[in-house]
Length: 71
Image (cartoon, rainbow, N blue to C red):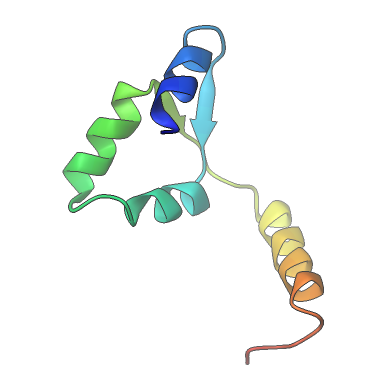
């Protein structure tokens, strides 16, 4: 389980997740409330991603998908 190591690191460091990680984590929970409670319990904060970082993430995705465009 990932929770215990994350909680341990949260005791030493300030940990944060971004909206993409939030969306990925949401798949493991039945409600927003349960997800938010788990995030709070692990001592994580929510941080926004800068637009340039999102642009680069899109480029990395395109490169990792062998140049296949989905649109």
